[in-house]
Image 1 (cartoon, rainbow, N blue to C red):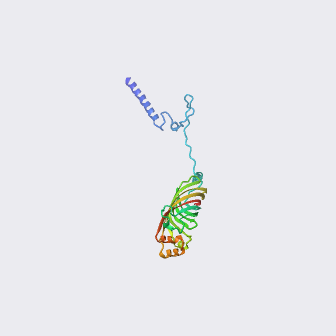
Image 2 (spheres, helix red, strand yellow):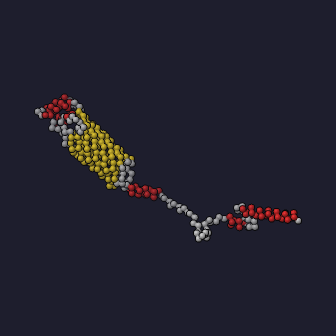
Image 3 (tube, rainbow, N blue to C red):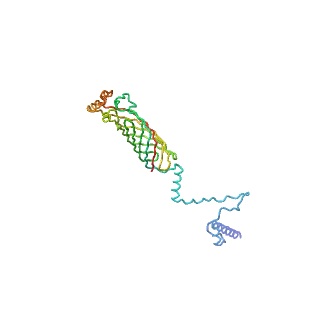
Amino acid sequence: MIARRALCLLTVLASAAAASTAAAQPGQPALGASPGDGAAAAAPTNPYDPSMQAGGLAPPPPMTTPEPEPVSPDDTERRLDDAKKEDSGRGLELIWLNVEGGYENVGLQTFNIDEEELTAGFISSSANGGVLGAGAGVRLLYFTLGARGRVGFFDDWQLFTLGGEVGLHLPLGRLDPHVDLGFGYAGLGSFKSAVSGAADAIAIRGVYGRISGGLDLYLSPVFSIGANASWELLALTRPGLSSAQIDRIKGEAAATPQQAKADLLAAEGSSVGSALALTAVAGLHF
């Protein structure tokens, strides 16, 4: 009798264990349940249930990330163009050219003690007058590289300069302040003198170094106006004249104080001068 009761108890415990194992396995219907009931139980459920409340507070809804609106290449280019216009009012600049005109003061012997060495008094060594110039080059963001030529018009001679130029520009909207450095050839021509022989024989040439600064105002992306101030250091030499040239000058300057100075032109002369110019500038930009 006792053995029968123990055997029945073991049978009941084995059946209960088998039913628990079947319920724990996903996708398997529980003991006594149909396959349809198992599929329904395996289906995912929405974790958010507004009816679930604790103390009158409901759980927050699930967070969703909105999908970004597609941006076409045309929209990107338009936005970049609008940003450029709002920033400076002008686009990227690659090539520039400008013309200038204004006032210039020149001293051929600014740093020389011997004022008779260069011209011996036959030609004035200082002058005031007008100046015209032009420049052209390329621009890479804040830097410019180009060439510039100028002609100064004075009573006794003309001053010609031609050389290279490098500049630093700071675009501030439509304003463009800049600083430039230049170096090149300088020469005098078209001499006028009371002694025509001296005017024809004297030649003065050399080199210059220039520093300048100014401010340009862009009236449009391709056109600007501005003002510029520059200072030049002039290193000049005068070749010595031949005996025939000196004799001719003495003959034309006979019985004048200049006759005795003609011999000074036989030796080569040199000087260090300077020039100051104030100009208005108009430019084109591409």
